[in-house]
Structure formats: structure tokens, C-alpha cells
Length: 271
Image 1: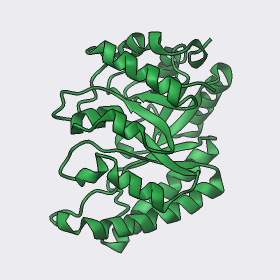
Image 2 (image 1 turned 45 degrees about the vertical axis):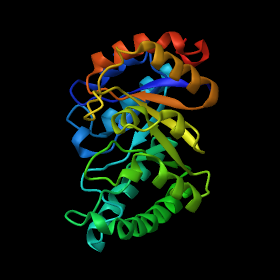
Image 3 (image 1 turned 180 degrees about the vertical axis):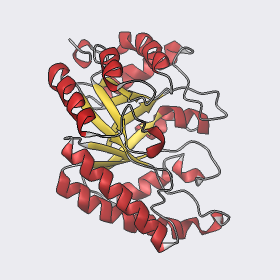
């Protein structure tokens, strides 16, 4: 398996139409588990899962999953809120296992509303939640990947610069726990991408651009020399990883794929 580019599933077009568009270019498709990204076009119905498996058997792409994150605070002080978040994650992990998905990206906990100063208490509960999730993930053969966040008041700054992630890597030295590095989030937060790439157990990437102010998820159309050097670096250092193009519009992903494809080794592209 070689480093490859992937696409996140979209919710605004029929599943078969989406798959017909992307399977010729992408080796990986990331499925959303958050309700915000589900729709009548894809809501994990049996018919939709059958369609997905037919295309997967024919075109041999891999699947990854992005965990739910809306109202899903693994470090919430309220035990009922925390328990509800865990149940959502357990359900998503079970679904990932049934779809033979091995990589499961999730977000760090948000800060306590109106009480950002108690973030260490949030982190203590988050660590307890991750330990429970890791036990479940290990039993299912799924790897948990925590993602770096953009600069945003809902998150502590150390979820952007990698320092929180380093703490968690020390706490959970398990091969079923690792990192998803979101390049767009790092750019928006003003964090050195190279510094994040030095961390251990990076298994997955999200790629998109922005205006360095907000997490816009723009297409890759500017500074192509920089992006090309980055992709070459990723293909050399992370030979078994995949990078999901996370633009909001499918056309933007196809444009980005066109610009980044020349920097991917042929083994990382569909035949």
C-alpha cells in the first residue's frame, strides 16, 4: 500500500453518482458519522451500504470514518453528557467495524461552556473516555486517530499546536491510538506543519486550504509549489498513510486532486 489521496463522502448528491465521479481518481473514501453530514443520499441504510460494497469490490478503494462530533463532548463535566457522547462513539465504532474500516478520526473535547479555565478537568474526563473507547476499538480492530484542531474559542490552543496530542500519545502508547494531521487546521492556526509531522503514530491526513483566519476548507489552487513539496514529503515519510481532500464541494476536491496528482507516485493512484 502506498500513500494515496482520498475524498470525503458528500451529502448533496446520490451515492452512486458520487461514487462514479470519484472512484477513477481516489483510492480512499472517508465516511462521515456525524448527523450534520448525513442526508437521504447517505444515512447508512442497507441499500446504501450494499451500493458502497459493490463499488468497493469493483474499484478496490479503502474506507475510513470520521467520528461524530456534534454534541459529542468526551470531556464534558456532566456525566450524562459524557455518557451520551460515549454511546455515540461506540455506535460509530461498531459501524466502522462492520464496514471493515480500520481508521477512525475523532476530535478532541471542546472546552466547558463559560468555564474555559477548567480545561484540565475536561482533559481528565476526556482521558477516561478515550481509555474506554480504546478498549472497544482494540476489540474491533479499529485504530483511533485524534485530530489537531483549528484556532477556535471552543478548543484550548494546545489542541492546535500538537502539545495536547503529544500528552495523549504518552498516555496511550498503543498501536490502536494515533494521529490524524489536518494540514488546513495547522495553516489556519499558524502552527508549523513540519513540527506536527515530527510526531509519532501519524496514520492519516486531512488536506484543505483557507484564508488563515477561518477554517474555510478551500480548494488547493494557490502556492502549488509549497503544496507539491508537502505532498512529496508525505509520500516519502508516510508511505502507508492516506490524505483526505476535505473541501466542502466535490468540484473543489476534483480541482485539488488535479493539482496534487502530479506529486503522487503512480502506485498511490488508481490503475
